[in-house]
Image 1 (spheres, rainbow, N blue to C red):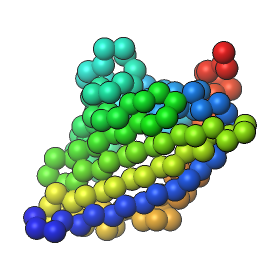
Image 2: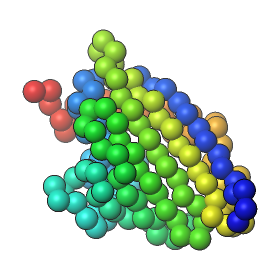
Image 3: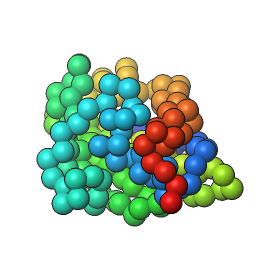
Length: 154
């Protein structure tokens, strides 16, 4: 597909908490605890949690199985996942974290690239700036709640 459709969204969100602990929430296993309806099947990980080159799958009601690969993993600083829906689209999700006083500043970037006309249609009809901002802004409540019950500052 020549000159495939690409949509990119970037948002900055401040989350109360130490960046090392906030960063731990960006693991596919940890996300089961704070992302509504999130479930994954870990296919490869030496540690059983997020790490560079770990691979897992997810399933959505209206899409085929999604394969995820962790392409960057620098604990406390940056994590990147490449999500592939064969025949539809690829999404690269990059999160960079910085400590700012009592907050962790997260710069979140989603880049969706269509692999087919069906994928372009899906991206155009399901991924909007407004939807992205709502999703990421929810992290301000969801992640601190998760941290209170799951991870303790050392």
